[in-house]
Length: 478
Ligand SMILES: NC(=O)c1ccc[n+]([C@@H]2O[C@H](COP(=O)([O-])OP(=O)(O)OC[C@H]3O[C@@H](n4cnc5c(N)ncnc54)[C@H](O)[C@@H]3O)[C@@H](O)[C@H]2O)c1
Ligand SMILES: N/C(=C\C=C\C=O)C(=O)O
Image 1 (cartoon, rainbow, N blue to C red):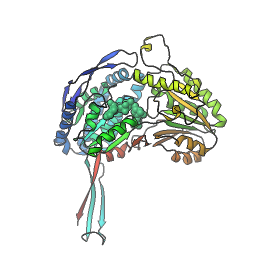
Image 2 (image 1 turned 120 degrees about the vertical axis):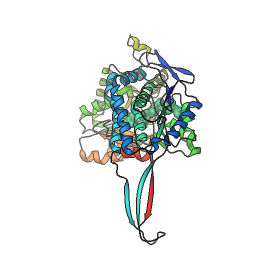
Image 3 (image 1 turned 90 degrees about the horizontal axis):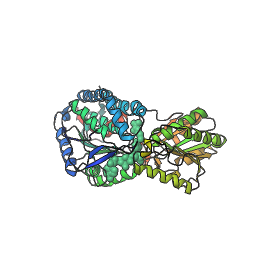
Image 4 (image 1 turned 30 degrees about the vertical axis):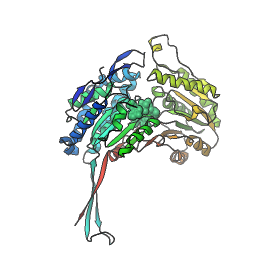
């Protein structure tokens, strides 16, 4: 897979090339062009020009039809997208086939459907005495696209998360410059080919590869020609982007880090809670922002739950690697830190020795810890690997206090059979998303996003279309 930029409808590879490494076995997959400041400037210029072209005056139906052509194009190259995502991330084919690529198709289709026949919001007003003028007025609100949107996406769900922003940004009538993670450039390049074949006007979709700080990512977010930034990544990166964009007062939509809690009450279906927490802690080896890293269990079932979770973690096989040697080393440093902070290791805590090619990759063991104080760094800091810490609680209020004592607030799970408790507790968990007796069940129309250091704004359905457009009130004196 050859990663290429795509600027103004032209594929190009200018810029020093850097190697693309396979997380599964450490082999070199190919090279990636490092986007220069000039390439970024060319992309923003092409995107601005496209806003002045046919795309800038396209109807909602025409934009919806374009999104459907892209969805069909991804579907038609399904296997290529699966192979590219598996190669770049080291994840299982099953995950790419059932999550990554279907969600990319779904993202484009969801926003095409949302656009169709979308009513503009209108109000009629009897002008009250305190307004200038008299008589009646008709007020209606139209939505105008923001213009050129910078989209920066992470390596953990490369295609899913980039299209989660690309689709609504285009649906709302914007043009985009996308900078995917330097770790996972392949599906973004494939998407450019699909969009090129789908006949979107040149400059509507632009792709520039490269690193972030001091490189393509930073050139893009500090570019004066960018009208909005939609970013997904670490909270610290979000802060850096905010600083870089501050001089231009660029609006931002941020999906950032997390340290997601699970609350398991004694009345829960324990089989379901264990199964659900195995999924929420170890899916994609914990490299999903929604993954659980803190589990709080009501004391009567704490010992049983921790033992069963540890047993399941030990039994996991076929799990994927960390995205890079650097990230593997980061996760392993937290495994060591947990020991230094006094953790009891119920399962895992090290790196596996498979005795095959995987030993050249970046695997770590699925890990379950107990016994740490809430002040431990292992309990407070995002690790972003297959690891969770399990601790007991005695009352509902204590459970909420433990769950909410975090600088993050992205997602949480609550396991209980008590309907009243579910409705009482869920709204009090300080996260943007609360799943009850489930995890990562997604309706793309719902608000998705985090509070505190986990993000700014919400994406999903109308929430995305609202961020990617400006409401304009038109008031006509009758
Ligand atoms: N909330 C969510 O929906 C969500 C989803 C996925 C991942 N994440 C978070 O993302 C992180 C893992 O992803 P990551 O390691 O790729 O994150 P990261 O912040 O290191 O990088 C994300 C993207 O930002 C770019 N970037 C880095 N520094 C930049 C800068 N100074 N200016 C502009 N761009 C810059 C990178 O090149 C990459 O494309 C975790 O913290 C995870 O929680 C959050
Ligand atoms: N944004 C979404 C998932 C984010 C996962 C984070 O790693 C989604 O499901 O829409």
